[in-house]
Amino acid sequence: MTRTAIILGASALIGLATLAHADEQAAIDGCINQIRTVTGGLGGEVLVSSFSEAGTNVTLRDSEGTIWECIGYSDGTVGDLRVNEEAGADDGEGAMAGASQTGDVQVRFAAGTTGATYSNSLGSGDAVRYLLGAQRDQLLTAELRGNSPQLDFIVYVPGGDILFESSQGGDSFTGALPENGEYAVEVFYNGNQGTSGSFDIVFEIN
Image 1 (cartoon, helix red, strand yellow):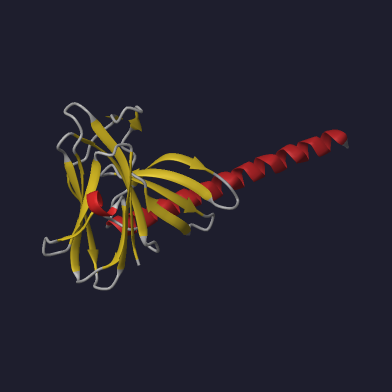
Image 2 (cartoon, one colour):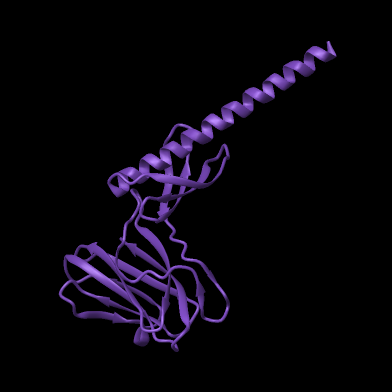
């Protein structure tokens, strides 16, 4: 009787492990499908997944290098999907180990969300422009979280006029937008030559 009970117990554990693996895979597949929907077809490479009955946490990278954080469920649905671009690690002295992205970056909001966070590193004289399509009277929040006081940002309205400058108003902007169109949030670094500044910038539109 004891031997039979042990065998049955082992079989039950194997069954539970198989079920957990299937639930985790369903959650991962749901996250990948959601990324394809949001990005218009980009696939996702799974970097890390952590299974839980309450929801599987999945970190993925799409074919353009964007890092996504996702919470998926065993039925293939997604509870949360957001951009979390990792650019490297701060060395503690205002320099950033990792790639620097400059030029224009189109801000993408995951389906069902109103916010996104981007991480980056800029060298002396470098700048990056984050582009966001928005409508008049929507509320835009842009918050810069940097490792250097030499990091600043400017918010431009679609016509190119300045709406906000962090050098005068601080590292966080929240305001109603005056017109429809594509807004630009330009982040730049004015530190000494040979140094760099790293930052997260948080966007939200309501």
